[in-house]
Length: 111
Image (tube, rainbow, N blue to C red; front, side):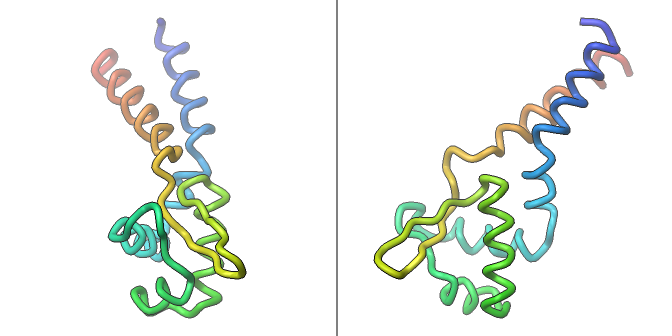
């Protein structure tokens, strides 16, 4: 693979990882992710429980959970009228890993 092909691959990696990078780049969402990581991934937490642990308002938590869900970083399961949020163990974090590995390879090859 030549330098331009490698750059094109990295550009594609950036495009693929963009939603995840934006979702996890926010400090508030990082704190929500840390709270969720501290729980059992199968049961998850409700908005009120996340609110208590992050000291954010319910609307703020709901807003950030929506962004994380749209990026595929977390999942939600319904139990009657209750929603439980948990880390997606088959998440799109691999997109970031691929991006970093491709950049690392590029840097080794060309710098």
